[in-house]
Length: 83
Figure 1 (spheres, rainbow, N blue to C red):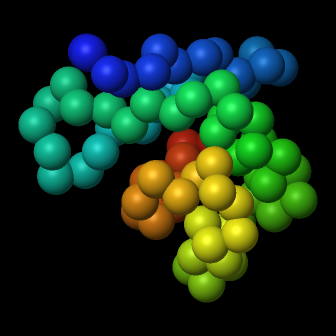
Figure 2: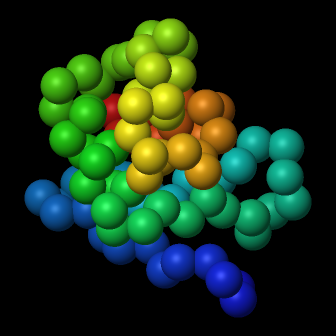
């Protein structure tokens, strides 16, 4: 686990995966861990737009430095899981 940041459960009692997503195509047990700050930003974005287009997700990654180390596919999966 080393340098991975512990996932923080989302507020509001949502039934999601607790701030981490399974990464497709990777070995089982490999998860993307989001920092509490990243989860907070993603939650705010979700309220404004629960189904962002591919171009909108790319724009979010460019405009929000806290999300810059997350792959576009991971952002897509986060929104899918959140719904």
